[in-house]
Length: 289
Ligand code: SIN
Image 1 (cartoon, rainbow, N blue to C red):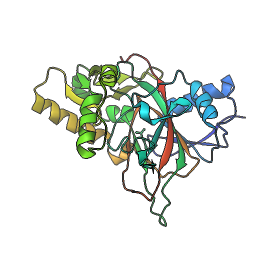
Image 2 (image 1 turned 30 degrees about the horizontal axis):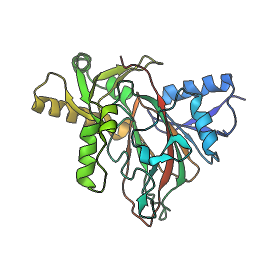
Image 3 (image 1 turned 60 degrees about the vertical axis):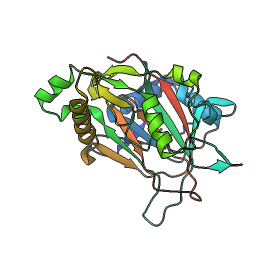
Image 4 (image 1 turned 135 degrees about the vertical axis):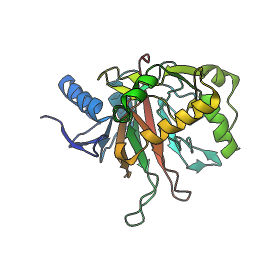
């Protein structure tokens, strides 16, 4: 039976209907799902029930899995699963509390960044009537590039930018001094890297703006003020409402997003005793061009 999908906003997202992620995926269905995924940039699956092995097995359909540098937040027995959570047990944070509270694409700070991420909601703050908490917003950066005038597109196509995880980590430590220092070993895994400001999607060939507030620190060879101004312009341009889909989570939702053609932001508007716990797998990507 063909996969049924429903668009979620003009440029971003599709909901996949009547789909059980715990079941093995045949190659025709995989191709169909990938084609919807590449066109829409992110997928939503509701009411899923997967074991950790099934989450990992579904993810492997799309490539190899990353093991995150923050080893203390990997799921015991399943190092491919990163825990994102504000829950504290026995005085210890069970997951990354402040993951993605800024616009970013996952792992853009690696030389070979991630292809996509698959995030599974285990606990979500209860809504208060219509008001939900801990939503996640997505924008389509290919649509954002295509909306720029030709002169700006041509300029951006000549530029490269620095992405730096340690720069972001220092900012997170200032906001949350409880965050442990990165070890020398961790620092070695995440040196600053340089990527084109506009990257070509490896499957669709679309041009995508590839700088983000989370990890990009400067444009190579540009005076700092000019670089800051251009980056601020691009962040504001990409994150306009017209390119956006905002997801209101329910337990059992799984979101899968493309880390080339989307950026996302997790809204930090909840606090304990409102608990939020999600399991994320992150797929290895390919060289940026
Ligand atoms: C992330 O950036 O991967 C976290 C997203 C979320 O917690 O909604």
